[in-house]
Figure (cartoon, rainbow, N blue to C red):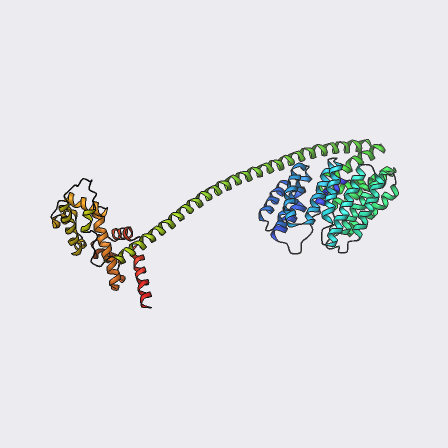
Length: 524
């Protein structure tokens, strides 16, 4: 049984049955056991689905190893190595020594098939290091046996047949040490080992020994938990090759035709590639030229069809990989844009929140200053004062005489004390008429002494009034805002609210709550 076929079988046989299968497990097993050889494109789609639905790093590792195994199966080894590297990252993170052993075992197979003996040995050494860290005894011993088997394949390829046989004996000894055959299918692994032993014996010309180990391989094949038809075909092929070597043509034909039957039924190209050349050789030796020509033609057709098929499949798989990579790049670009917008939005929200906090603190400070000023004022104190006239610098040019300015200030004081500003119809014209001064002079004095315009002056008087009223008369705390606005001459709820906050730093509702809390503290 040839080494390349055994590796493929090991990949396909890595999917043992699960007691109670999850959705992930069912897709995983079906993909590995059925689709990898029958529908590789769908298999590739499935492994990507498995990756997307993985709920743990363990499942991520399994999906990646399945994908790499699929690529190996169709000779896309460079891409398979990349996937193994990705799987190793997760395996290292999880300290999954079983997965790490498997990864380096697969790498060893890739290097062996590429003729890179040194790299193969390094991979096997790495696999051995991780294998020894596996806690589960049966799994650890199983992988130790697999590593010895891989070393034996390397030695056989180097034509060191006796050394290969010695190493195979070590692998057989290890497999026989496994105690729980429900965890590890010992018979399956022994079938592989006996098959490799028979190859070495045949290459040494020891056909009797070759038959002995082929019989052992067949016996253990039937003892396997999950007998594989392809494995049985390989055993018959081995027997046919051995009989052909000693010119027992009838027995050779009998076994090779059995092997051909399994190759045709399973449509397993690697087995066909072994059987058809031997049948050609058989019929050439026996002089059956028509059969020789028939199998020669069939073999050439199979090679051509398989070559084209594999190229098509490989191309499609590679195209699918590139398409997947392209989609991943597009997704990453989209995610990057989303992240950028999220960062911009977050920055904007931070600025907005900072501005809100700043405004809130500023309004609170303004309110505190307003309340302190309010508390420090005498009850009858007005916004304007008569003593401000003398504060004018001596070198300044007076727009009006000091006497006139003093007269206007006194008029405004009386206007405030009489609470005429509460009239909703109050205007610059009406106040000018009450005080007996033209509008320009009145506007000038208000601007000079209060640093504001007429409308703001009136609004501040009204707000100060309602603030005091709310503090002195608790009944007003239960009034609607619109009623309070009308009470002090504002034409609308909104204008009252805007001016209230402008003067005090708080909204009417917030101030009412503040006064209520103050009253509760005082009465407690």
